[in-house]
Image (cartoon, rainbow, N blue to C red; front, side, top):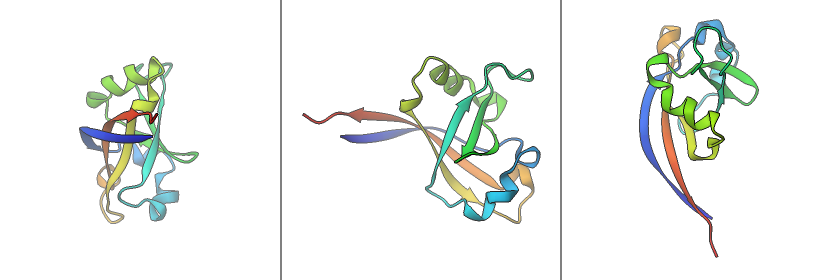
Length: 111
């Protein structure tokens, strides 16, 4: 199976100071994949999409950029989204510590 990906957006992880990102920031490296989880029952935003490293919640896709990811995840198309770390700055303010890229993948199955 081969795959390619297309850039969709990049953004800083929102809400880092409210979650456990500080506990794992030393393990975050550019290029590493992160996991996206839709939170349709989130009272603050029904389109909320949380960003995880393994089982540790880092924060969210910013509210003004989460609609596409929320819809794809909600309808079971999580396999077409990829979230990768672009930059980590441990000394920056928490809102600016981790920048990620969102990509759509095009997976092609071999014969």
